[in-house]
Structures are given as C-alpha cells and as structure tokens.
Image 1 (tube, rainbow, N blue to C red):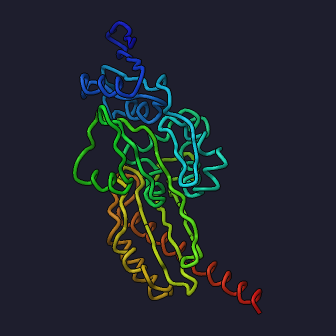
Image 2: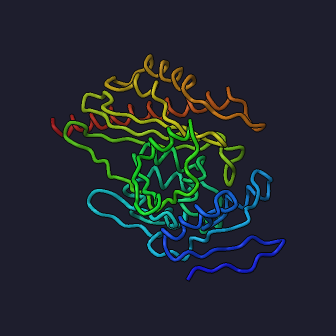
Length: 310
C-alpha cells in the first residue's frame, strides 16, 4: 500500500506509488503542492538556486516497475523514462542506432550526475539538452494520462509547449526512437548534435543544435530536420532553413541563405550569460558547417563509388 511519512516543518512528504496509475492519481490530488521525483538532479539544482520552490510532497517514481531499461525490436529502441542518462550513454544499442542521442546525453553534466539523472527528467524539464536530438530522431513520447496511455510525437509536444504548459499530472512512461535507414532512393543519411556552453564541459548549455536528414545519389537533400534549444530556450524546429534545403544540392549560395534562415528562425531565450545575437550566430554557424561536412562526405562517397565501378 502506498504510504507517506509524517509531515515535518523541514521536510516534504514522500509518497511511494505502486504503479503509474496510482502515481498519476497522487499528482491529480496533490496538484501544484507536489512533484514527480526520480533522479531529482535538475529539481535539486532549481530549488537550491531559487528558480523553483520545493513542494510539500514528493511522488517517488523509483519503485514503479517497468519504467526503466532499454529494449529494441526491428522498428525502434524503447527507453524507459526512469533509465538513467548514464545507462543510455553506455548502451551500445543507443550508440549504434541513434548516435546523435548518445552524443547529446554524453554532453549533459558529469558522469556522476548522469548516473542519477533520468532521460525522462531531462525531457519533462522542457529545456533538456537531449530534446533537440530527440526531435530530429523523430522520437515519440508515451504518457500516462490517467487510465490510458497516449503517444505523442516529440516535435508536436515541443511545439505545443510554445503556447501552453503540459498537464502537470501527465507522467512520461517511455521514449520510442524509430530507426531511420538508408534506402535505394535515399542512399545516404547524415546527422549531428552540438552543444555550446560557457566552458568546455560540465556546463549549462547556451546553444544546442541537432540536424539530420537524407541525401539522394545526386547530392540533393531528400529530407531534413533541424532543431535548436539551449539554456532556458524551449527547443523548436527551424522550418525556414528546412524548407530552403529540401530538394536542393548543397552549395555556397544555398548555405548563405540557410545561415540567414537559422538566424531568423531560432528564438533563444535571453539570460545574463550570452546575447541573443551570439546564440543566433552560433546556431547558424553550426548548422551550415555540418551541412558542408555532409556535402563533402557525400561527394567523397560518390567518387569512391565511381572508382569501384570503373
């Protein structure tokens, strides 16, 4: 049976639900006086810095079975929301199937923090550094919304955050990352993730950028997704830059236009550490650099294929 210690003046109550439905019910009953907690690393940072008030009740998710671990089938990787960032970073399947996500997770905090922090906590923070990568990887989020589970595209969820807060009672259960493979029509896939902070490592991000897509044999872009976040910026796609690129071969003139589109489409949230102009230019530089690398790699692969066929 779920239980709670006696309340004290100094410590919040801690509730231990037996399953996700019970956890969701506690949250609905306790509302804004409560918080879901698993690793708690980001929440603790927010409380200590005064960015958020410590609630009267913690709903401890750590004892609920089935919310951690990584599984794979022939379609996708499924990552439980309570899987730690460290587990994701070390898992060979994540590195092989979604290297962009592995790179994003590896850039978050120090190893000791990643061994406590969960991938679900990074997502529901709404500004987690893994989110641009998950958007580009076309991940899906599965939520407990009461008696039923609802699956939502990561991009659609992130877009909705721009206009309204999510229901606090919704509980993230798992993250589904589909495999995207090369095909005869789109023989080359490319992708990259970058995080820029105030120092080289173990630092909050100023800018995070992820991009991924496919390239046809003739070097034109078949599909492309670009997302950016960083700091307290809600991650969002850069539709203007995507539209310019789709169907086009990468060249210097196009990249100049893409650079401008990223500058116009990226909407970073201000803070004392870096100007909006710096963040915009940094994001634009990262995007066009990766696109140029992809063009060069595609050209080199084409030349090798021509030599082999000669």
